[in-house]
Every structure is written in structure tokens, then in C-alpha cells.
Image 1 (cartoon, rainbow, N blue to C red):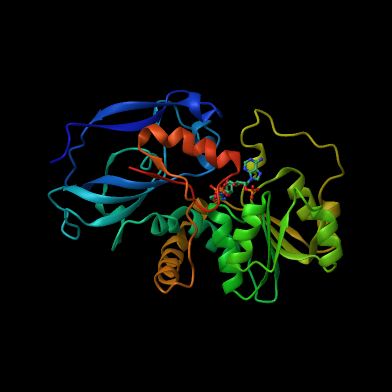
Image 2: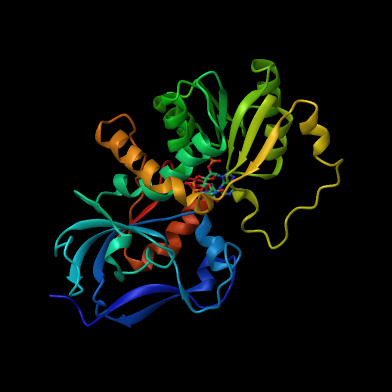
Length: 333
Ligand SMILES: NC(=O)c1ccc[n+]([C@@H]2O[C@H](COP(=O)([O-])OP(=O)(O)OC[C@H]3O[C@@H](n4cnc5c(N)ncnc54)[C@H](OP(=O)(O)O)[C@@H]3O)[C@@H](O)[C@H]2O)c1
């Protein structure tokens, strides 16, 4: 029996402070249009970009609007034209506004049918596909590459590490805690650098004098500068994100010579990358990742801290920003 109302998180005013930007509201249970299904969310993925969405940085939106992106869910109602799905089927939904809510009405052709909704399988759609497209399409990874992944123990970082290892590359991961060092060693990283304990620039210059061929860069600030300085000849740095500045009202101003000086003389390149701009690869990468998961070749890491229900979402986002997470942060409903 479906309820008459349900709860969801909405952005009530644009702010980088997620806690003050959002509110929990009660909405009527949706009646599906003929081509729609209604799903009950079981797990929702927490993303660094939730803050950017709530601040209106990722795309322009006028509050109030819904937040949360990917969810693993169970079908609870069907529109009259929907033939290929049934009540009780499990699916992944992947739409801005679809994640942080108990129920969601969505076009039945927009969901990914899955055997069983689990936190692990949910990690494929944003974290996994970002890593796959970022490394393989944008970064043009090769087996001979030395690859450096920053925020390597995080949601998308642990995928990047595992995919780079599968590609046969030499993989370096950076992080800021010893717990994450252990985790990344277990994943198989050839070198793990806790840059709160070791000087990243010195380690790279000493141990990788030929430079880094491919950087999957999630953090920004000084880490970005060090990665640029240590690029190899024809090195590629994929700008995946700059989480270190997402909570700041203004980007840091840096007074330096223009960056062409650092790139031209070694034919290196910086490649900005938003996975939503690579939609033509989503289907192919998703199928491949699902296959890698089912054959155990990739074991996506899910952070073990439990967040339960709509009321826990703000804490989950703040937890991700505390930097304590090892693997993907998930909210359970
Ligand atoms: N371009 C795209 O399409 C796309 C898609 C998805 C995600 N992303 C980006 O990928 C990055 C990771 O996102 P995610 O959602 O997977 O998060 P996450 O990596 O699971 O969590 C964030 C991690 O970032 C690291 N970090 C480094 N400096 C930080 C700082 N100053 N404040 C907070 N965290 C810091 C922390 O790990 P350490 O302690 O190990 O440093 C933290 O655990 C973000 O930059 C995000 O915007 C981009």
C-alpha cells in the first residue's frame, strides 16, 4: 500500500552551505503519467556536487527545486502504457532531483533495470561512469601510463584507481589519512601518498622523474598546481573537480605567469571534464562497469558510515566534505 504523502529534500534558497540551503517538505504521492513509473528509493548516492547544485553553480535553477541525483529503487506503481517493468522490479534512476526523496515518478524509459538494488551497484552511475569516461575517453589512458588519482579513496577516486589498474597502468593515489593509505594499498595502488605526511611535490620529483602521464584530479588548489608541475612530456591532466574550493564563496586568486608556460614545453594538456557532456558514452560505459562488477573485476567501495532517511542527508553531505569517507557515501531509506 503506497502512502498518501512522502518526504523529499528541496533547495529553498541558493547557498553553498547545504544545511541552510535545503528543507524537508511533504509532497503528495505521485500519480504516474501513462509512460511513467513511480519508484520508492532504497539507496541514494551522495556527491560532492550536491553543494554545487544547491548553490546554483552546476546549472542555473530557481528555488525551490529538488536535489539528489542517483538512486537505487523499487517500482511501486506503473503508468498504463508501461509494459517492460513490473511492480517490485529494481531499477536505478539517474536524474537531478531524483535522489533525495522517498518516491519519484519518472519516465519508464529513463531507468536502468537491475537485478537487485544494492549500494554497490548504485555507485556505477555517477562515480563509476565519471571515472570510466574521464580516464578512458578524456584521459586516453594507456597501459604504459603512470597515472595519479587525487582523492583516490573517494567515491569516484576508488573507481579511477581500479580502472587504471585494470588498464595495466602504474597507479599512484593521494589521500590525507592513514586509514585511506591502508585502503588504497589494499586496492592495489603501486604508491600511496598521504600528502599530510609526505611532501607530494618532492615525492613525485624524486620517485617519478619522468613525470606523470595522466592525472585524474578531483581536489584543486595546491594539489592541482603540484600535479601540473609534475606532468610528463605529453602528459594529460583531467580536471574532474576542485572540491577544495567548492565551499568557498570566491575562488582563490593566484598571481602567477600564465599556465601555457608550463604546458607548451612538454606538450602537456589540461582537459576539463563534466561527464554530462559525454552522454554518448554513458550506455557503453554503464554496461561495461556492470559487467566488471558482476564478474568481480571491480569492487566498488561504499563507506561504512550509516545514514538513514531524508533527515540524514545533510549530515551525509557534510560527512563527505569532512574528508573522512572511504568509498562512496550512501543514504539508505
Ligand atoms: N566532472 C564530473 O563529471 C564529476 C562527476 C562526479 C564527481 N566529480 C568530482 O569528483 C570529486 C570527488 O567527488 P565525490 O563525490 O566522488 O566525493 P568523494 O571523493 O567521495 O569525497 C570527497 C573527497 O575529497 C577529498 N578532499 C580533498 N580535499 C578536500 C577538501 N578540501 N574538502 C573536502 N574533501 C576534500 C577527501 O579525500 P582525501 O582525504 O583522500 O583527500 C574527500 O573524502 C569532486 O571534485 C567532484 O566534483 C566530478
